[in-house]
Length: 456
Ligand code: ADP
Ligand code: MG
Image (cartoon, rainbow, N blue to C red; front, side):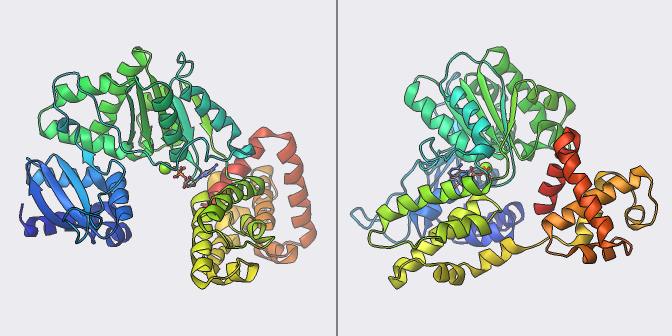
């Protein structure tokens, strides 16, 4: 493969991974050489190599082998220091994306799992109310005992710990039952392997190898929605494993029934086992996570003091997702260690102002009105208009309630935006929904769904 061809592949990758990912992860890659069936890239840091391998390895391999079929593996080495010795830092972690065929492909040879993140273990997973059920289910599956629910389907919003839990299950199983063939893949990686097998006319191998897996985990299954032949193959693999009583663990960003463009038969299959969701974090869980992180940082940066109230402040102000929360703390420690300064509230406000501002993003009254009327299938004009029939009045009250909860607008202001209603009407509406929320499970669920979509 020439540098030119690599350049073209890079361009194609820009489309696939998006501009931001491209800039951060793909652009810095330099094709160093191709020897036998391995393409080696030089990368500026170990971290980058690991990250690219884990997240884009399969895509890169897929595109490369389209141009140059003999490439079956990619590898990363850290810039500049190719000679042996201390300078040459081999990328730790199994930083290679091996095509399934890279293993000597006798029939029955194994599917390779994507690399697991060392940090994602049960020990480092903080349990609180919003995730205790999922955690218990994950622990149970990780015991590797008789299969009681199949599949285990985990779902929840971005950054709530789905991937973390799946890796934790895999680590635990590998430690307790090393004889099991545990395979963790993202749905995207599943697809790339499938497409590559199709192209190489190795579907028999592909099928055979997947059917020899003992525990299969597929992360972010929503990715295959709308991708028909991948869904089809996934469905067959899935059924074959369930028939053999092999454990399957799937994650998605929403409940199986709510994933659009996913075949009905797959949805119903996914619902057959145990479906559990990760709820948005609450204050206590966020604080717990921050504390456990801070403990680890304390070991890493001895002598760096943390003032009282900083963690509480962060747990209170950053409610989006755990990834953002962790990122904030990491930045805070890095910054404080650079300036050799105690971590105080002021420092946090200073160095995290962008994150804090982004988390502050309040939804607007219009957004709430629009989402609520869509949710209840009424026209926006009917929600704001004068009609008092129940079909319009209830959604209107729901919208008022959400405006009170999610914006900082006063009752009179909210009233004005609902067709010039009086603030007592708004107050009455808000109270009514508060009551219903406690009495009526359907109402509680509607509110939860709306709140989530509005926050998301
Ligand atoms: P998802 O796959 O649901 O988008 P991840 O599993 O990638 O989310 O989690 C995002 C980040 O938040 C990871 O660094 C993970 O370790 C961390 N995280 C999420 N939930 C917890 C938790 N309960 N305890 C500790 N860390 C968590
Ligand atoms: Mg994930």
